[in-house]
Image (cartoon, rainbow, N blue to C red; front, side):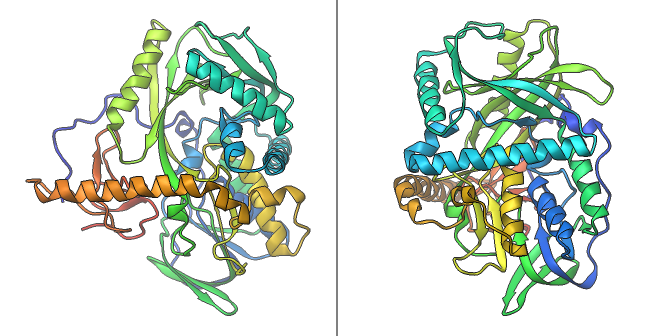
Length: 474
């Protein structure tokens, strides 16, 4: 079906600021048959780090990326590497005991430290910054105060302040020193180079369409070839083709970002606790110009107007920073787990030959290295770190998140019913998602068809952009 024609493309550059830099690759498409010890599905930061660590450990590894490296969430991040993560710790403690929250902080701390060492050793620039979770509304103040208590319970050395550098009134803020920010593309290039130097083989334009479990491993089929492997790690934004029902344990979130040329740039990394989230940091372009980066206006993928959300963010930025000029706009997709913690490990309980990594919840730059270390320890027969229990894909504590899971899936059912009811009376019927048959909605900001059920996204011609769908619509 043709895309609606009443929406004109946005005039601003719809690409991340990182894309001004040279991107990794290109790498060849998988063709024919091959065999490796491990196949990693997904060429984002986490998949690449898994490949790097396993190759260092002496395993033969291939990475299969459906599009281009950096085309997904890792290339559309805001580049913050922080243990203070908005109001996340409050959410974690609502559905997990304090000991698990502390283990999550330990995992993130380990991941952050590993990434900083990697950047130092490979010449990737890191900029040390303090991080804040700030409030400009009464509701935001209550949430920020709650995050202060939650962060301290989880072992973070945070402090409370009303003195921030932000150029607008702030009621209060949680502050954590010693965090850092990076250029996402510079980091991806360094990880790709390091993985290739260790012998990892990378393939782009190689979409996986089937994963068949075998007694001695698995067979991974793409749209151009086939790979046999002793183990498979699915490190896509949302796991595909492996079972485990992860689509029912995650909620896909779309959020927006922009850069602006303006006189004011922050020396810290800031994220609001208000219901209308706003993120701020500085960023330096490939040409050396320093810009302001703003982000926010998140929503469940496929629900509501993407243009309206992006316009709210841009309107706020232009009103807050008079005279600013928009340079770039883009969006990213993240997966929010129902229990607040990532899922890392076997796709189904007991089978360690097929593993998944998902649910980074917008904080993958600190969590992805920890997840990769955990996967590598498992597959290489190493010692599992104590903090690994906070990231496991299957744990008894998930019963504490049953209420949240029921609510998320009830919303999915409602979206399914409303979509099909509306489609019956539509003169120009929208296409259906090839995952579970949800009625797709047109995303006029990005010229894509988005599924309001589990976040699959398709190009106007039906090709898959984001999973869990793996087949195009027709």
